[in-house]
Amino acid sequence: MKRVLFFSACCLLTIKSFCWGFYAHQRINYFSVFLLPPEMLVFYKPNIQFLSDHAVDPDKRRYALASEAPRHYIDIDRYGEFPFEELPTRYDSAIKKFSEDTVVANGIAPWWIQTMQARLTNAFKEKSAAKILKLSAEIGHYVADAHVPLHANSNHDGQLTGQKGIHAFWESRIPELLAEKEFDFMIGKAHYISNISKFIWTRVLESAAEADSVLQNEAALTKKLSTDRKFAFEERNGKIVRQYSSHFTVAFNDELKGMVERRMQMAIASTASFWYTAWIDAGQPDLKHLQPLAFSEEDLKEFEVLNAAWKNSSLKGRPHE
Image (cartoon, rainbow, N blue to C red):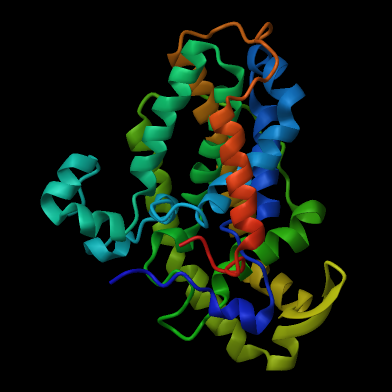
C-alpha cells in the first residue's frame, strides 16, 4: 500500500513540516562544517551558506521526482521485531528476500545514504568543487533524516494512533522554538567511519528504538493538559496560526529528556563524519585551490526545477514520507 503523502494535520494546525524542518536541516549542515579539520574547513567554511541553503534540496525534489520520497525514511518495524534481524543490511539481499517493490515502499534511506557517500567520494577524487558542495549538502539531509525516530517507524505521523501532527511537532516545532536558546551544537570533531553500512544502520536502529517513546510521551502529555493548553494561536511569518503551544512544546521536550537535542547533535556529528570519510577515502585531495564554483547547466536547471516545484506545490505541509 502506497504511503499517503498528504499531511492533513498541516491543514488543521497550519504548521509547515519538511523532514527535520527547513530550519533544522539548514542548522545541521551549518554546524557540521565546524567539526571538520583545517584541511577541509578552508573549503567548506567559505561555502557554508551554500551548504546550509541547499540542505533542503532533497525535500524540494520530492515535488518534482516521484522516486525521491523513499530515500528519506525506512519503515523498519514492518520487518518484524527490534533489532529487525530478518532484514538484510545489503540492498540486493533485501530485495531478493522481500522483493524490490516491498523494500522501496518501506523506504530505502540507509542504502541511499551509502550511494550518496560513494558519489561524494568520487567528487573529491575529481576535485570538482560544484559536485563536492552539492553532494555534501544533500547527503547531510539524508543522514539527518536517519536520526529522526519517526523516520524509522510506519506510524510516521501518529496516523495509526490518533496523533496526527506529531511528526512536525517533534522535528520542526521543538527545534524552531528551543534550538537557538537551549541546544548546544559545538560538539567536537568529525571522525573517520571505517564501516559506512554498519554506522548508518546503527543510527537507524537508534531512531527506531526511540519511536515508541516519542509517541507514548506525547499521548501521555496530551491526557494531562487540556486542548486550550496544547494549542495556541501565535504569529508565524506575519500570520496568526494555530499550532502547538510553547507551553506544550517545552513540556514535551522535557518529557523526552533532551532527545531532540541529542539526535540533532548526532546528526551534526554524523554529517561531518560522512564528509570527512569521503575526503579521506578519496586520498585527502588538497581543497585550498579548487576552482570557483562552476555548476553545470544540468545542475543549474535542476535548482530551477526544484525551486519551481516547491513554490508551485500545494503539498508544502506534508511530511517527507
